[in-house]
Length: 165
Image (cartoon, rainbow, N blue to C red; front, side):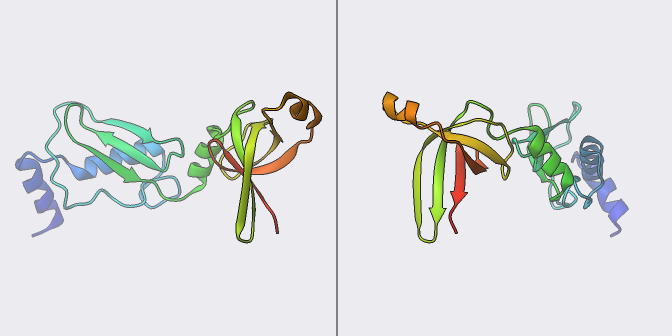
C-alpha cells in the first residue's frame, strides 16, 4: 500500500491528518522537521488520532520550549519534541530561570561534596548562565557583615552552583 493511499484511508476512517499536524508545528516553530528549532521528527505515523472538528491549538510546552503541545480542543493532545538547537537556546535565554531578587540556593560543589546555603540573585539569567549572587543569613548582624558577592552558574530555577576544582 502506498503512503498516499494509507493517508487517504486514515482520513476516510475519521482520523486526523498527521501531515497537517507536521505542517502546523513547522509553521508554529518557523523551522522544518529535523532543522534546529523545528520538530525533531515527524509525528509518529502509528498514531490514530480522532479527527478534530475545531482548529488545532498549538503552543510551546514548558519554559525551555523544548517541545510543542498540539491539542484538539476537548479531545486528544500530543507533544512534539523540538530539535536541539539555537532556537531552543534563544527561547531559554528569553525566559530567565532566575530573576534579580529571587531567593536561590547556592551550592558549592567539589569532588565528592556539596555544601549549600540560601542566597539572593543579584542578576537575572537563563539556565547555564553565570550571575552574581549574595549569600544571606537569618542572623541580621551576619547578614550586614556579609556584603560579598559571588559568581554562580544557574542550574535550574532557584538553584545556582559554584564548582570547586
